[in-house]
Image 1: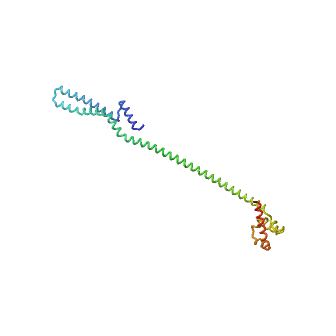
Image 2: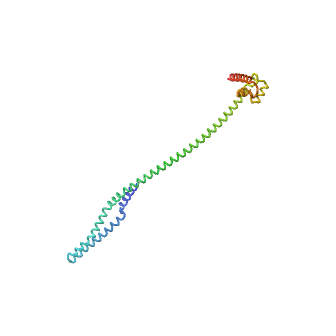
Image 3: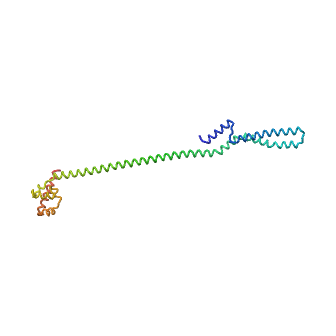
Length: 236
């Protein structure tokens, strides 16, 4: 219920109970009516009194003229009595625009308050979701990094095991023609035990370290490469 409709209902209730519609109007009405009636009776009494005494028309005229203000007061009271409702309607008309504007402003404030509250909740929810997404992203990144490190560790371990296995299965240098037990021991002192070890070093360097002919070392390398090819073909 708006303030305007509430004010109209109050006016109707006052009107039905005979209460004043506009503050102060009822008091003014009764002052005018009372003064007018008393003055009118006094005026009539003066006219009758001076007429019965046989005075000239002058006192009667004065009495008649003196009653005019009382007649005006009586007329004013009757006018207020008859026009009270109309005055109240004009009063409502003059204030209805302001009341309607206030009511619409109140509704607008409520709507704006709801919009602000909704935006605040939405923004807060988005911030919470974003924070949760960042937390999950950090957790997943940490897990991926941990798995990557573990994979690299396992790959390195597997590679070392494979190299040891290949080295263990590789032909021994004693299988190379021209390398006897004594030379094999000398090569072992240089860290060369298997055919792959021999193929990692150049013939010239090995010839210099051993102090033997490069031709002999070259023959070792040819034989070592043949054994390596045969072993690889056999494993396939």
